[in-house]
Image (cartoon, rainbow, N blue to C red):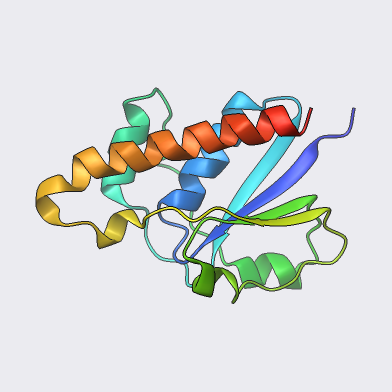
Length: 140
């Protein structure tokens, strides 16, 4: 059976898209193949690494990628899903041949206030996981 290929895109590929990629590859194993990239790749968010370890997922060795490099390499996806704000998502290049382009807006963990960062990042992680489970169910 052909795997459904999904690309998750956010601004820096440091948090939301990394979590979505990890969850889809884990929860949709065998049926999905996910990658992630950013419009302006940055560094992995250390708090995101920490909250993912809390759910037994180690993303600490992940790299950040440029969506434009994937586009230039003519990578093919069934779905491109933006997980940043809608205006930033509009900057994503259009990949030819995709079945669907979706937008799931999640709060950017790097924009959170210091005193609530850990708790709120956990909430974002859980929202992303729930959306991934919903997506897996819709695709089958």
